[in-house]
Amino acid sequence: MISQIGRYEVLGELGQGAMGIVYKAKDPLIDRVVAIKTINLGLAMDEKEEYEGRFYQEAKAAGRLNHPNIVTIYDVGKSGDVAYIAMEFPQGRELRDVMNDSRLLPVDQVLDVVAQVAQGLAYAHEHEIVHRDVKPSNIMVVRDGHVKITDFGIARMASSAVRTQTGMVLGSPKYMSPEQVMGKVIDQRSDIFSLGVMLYEMLTGEAPFVGENVNAIMYQTLNAVPAPPSTLNPAVPGMANFIVAKALAKKLEDRYQNATDFAVDLRACRDTLPRSGKPIDVTPLAGGEKKLPDAIDVSGRRGPEEEEAKPTAALSQAFDSAAATMRLAALTGTSEDVNELSKTLKIVRPSSAALSQAAPSAQIPRQASPVAPRPVASPGPAEVPAKPRDSNLLLIAVVILALLGIAAILIA
Image (cartoon, rainbow, N blue to C red; front, side, top):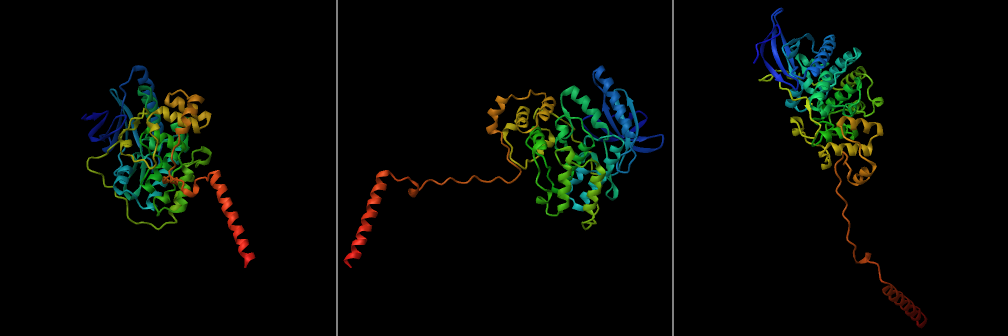
């Protein structure tokens, strides 16, 4: 392990991310403990200059953010082929670790945590900065349930460079907005959708969009409507169902237009509930920070996060390839959206003939419980059509019986 980064004395390693190593370090000038996030610049010369320029631009923009719910950036620098960001070292735990330990937090605490994140995002959005990678592992919970957002401004910078090198899409697919999946230009409403995914997971213990591979998750994000949280957790009030539905709206115009309104509704819902009183345990785990890779391969191979995911709805094996995702999207999406997805996945848009051939098998079960097929009853004897001859004999028998009855009446 290295002992020095710039002027900072490295005290230990906190964890590893997709872009570099995170260290705990000390600033000897003011005797302050900081977190140092390193970014490897070992790229080709032409990519390196563009990447480094974008890194400084984004890091400086994030450094201008000064909000109680955002981790403060102190310094940006470079040491050899490693660029670094020195930031506040919050004493607490990642929200992901808290969720893994607690499974389900009390609903009032969930609403409070997400409202704080929304308030921090609102401040960043007012300064024209979009986070682009909102997820539990980028949220720190410190003392008294206070929340801080980390990794501001880094996702945008990293996405361009990583895609240039490997053709990979940066970000955790479970939390990506529909416009991110489609490769469109995004704004603050993308962060709101990602935060809505996080809210759903915290309320129910399940992600709203899951699947056996990345392509299945991407398709569900674009098309599936998750069940209301209260159906999975009876403690969730009806008002929270509406808040989640609005945050997860597919169309931008139907979604919350700003994070401030999102935070206001979350707090209003929280105020209708009794307080749980029990504080969130933020005692740091032994071994420090544990980061999952942020870069996800769109080829369909599973990453660590996808290996553990258990789908809530059965998905066709047709989702085993990006081509199948493209074909299914073409069957349901608009022409513009399909073209955007074609560019993102670098797959030629399927022809009309290919779609007509795939249409019969391109059915996806909804999130509702599967209904067993109704049994088809075998035709019984009464259901077998009578032959014409049998019908004539029956008619003759009826006539004879009628005549006998009339004769009996006359004789009597």
